[in-house]
Length: 294
Length: 305
Image (tube, rainbow over all chains, first blue to last red; front, side, top):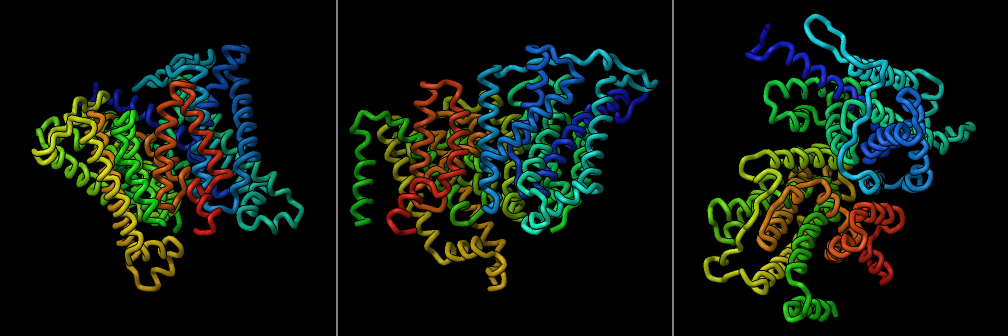
């Protein structure tokens, strides 16, 4: 068995693989945050809560209604997105034009409500969600075993990230979205329904979080706390990458996942904090973030 | 008029041990009131929203507990050590956080507080998941034994009054005025020649130190320091206390702390695990329709700011 620094290569590759999967989730979540912040100026603290809701939607769908993984991959984000639009319509809308801190505080409250309800209804302990039949087992790559499901998570999240980037930067809808951020009243004067556009943006952003939740369900335990544990790390990822940049969110999400995986091999005690330490270093060297502008 | 009001409030507070109100409950409340006032110094007067203030509260709580259990320090030394630890942490966290503004500052403090949380979870001297238990109150400066709740109560009350007085003094000092100017218009303050970063950092350290005082006293009152002292939910609670009572008012955070601590105490008996949901709903309601907070609304009715 080949070794690097006394650690078997297979172990390192395995951890890097896990890190890349985590990084894929970081990328999807920080992408949603960047979209919502970039287009609406709202820091969505409830992002982790919507991620957890996506996973629970898939779980309930399977247990109560017998909805399999593949339809859940579409239905659960849709349900989460609709809920998000409701939150935007009823509450968030009333805070536009105020200090963005209020948006942060409101969504923090939403996150508490959502986590509390999930905990009361489903209990605090985690539940497992089965891996779909099509993606069970692993492929032998010669130097390591690659679980099919994890490979699928990485491919799927990269596709979603690229798709989102394409919609916002390269389509007419994306152009309207960016215009709404730049000058809402003017865009409205051209006959575009700007309030609807904002509702759709928030719904789309949290649907991304919901989709990440469904993708994550088979590889982690589905529990009410899964969102709040993740959202802090994702915030750090966003500070590192720079908030406005969509591509920055994707790249830094994946990279930090890999670094976290590597830390698990070299010095496991620090794996929980490595992202925060990197954030502190980035703040010292480049306060605006690696891809951000002042 | 105002002096009479302060006098009456002081007398009422001093008379609490004579009543049947549970003193430990009032002491906990006062510790959180100190914490909320310290937080409000930063948010209400400095315009900086820290989403990780529990880090300072908890760091002091752990340091005090550690000094008492491991080094058999007296309460005076232990409290001073806790406050110093919180101030030092405030210097580090504040130094990083003030490199960004507004919501970014909130996110940076949140992440750094999470870092402190994980350190407290895994460091050898914090007792891991159990925290530090059985922290004895000892005797203040070797003279005044604090075992009785009455003695401890007057110590906490004295500290609370001192914190209120200190915050009023800070806010009305030239330093406080410059801080308010920075909050209102930072580019203008810079162009007037103020070293904005130093003012902000000092505000951060002062706020962290006072928050630490609350945490240190809390450890002595309850006899333990646990992970919940450094947790994100405690950071959230102190924001709620300040928001509910009135951001930028002197007595709002005190009132807010009173309401939130009482809610948690009695509501958990009434509704059990739904407390988190209730707190979240109060958050949403406050942000949507009650942004001035209770004291802010009363002052506005009274025609003053």
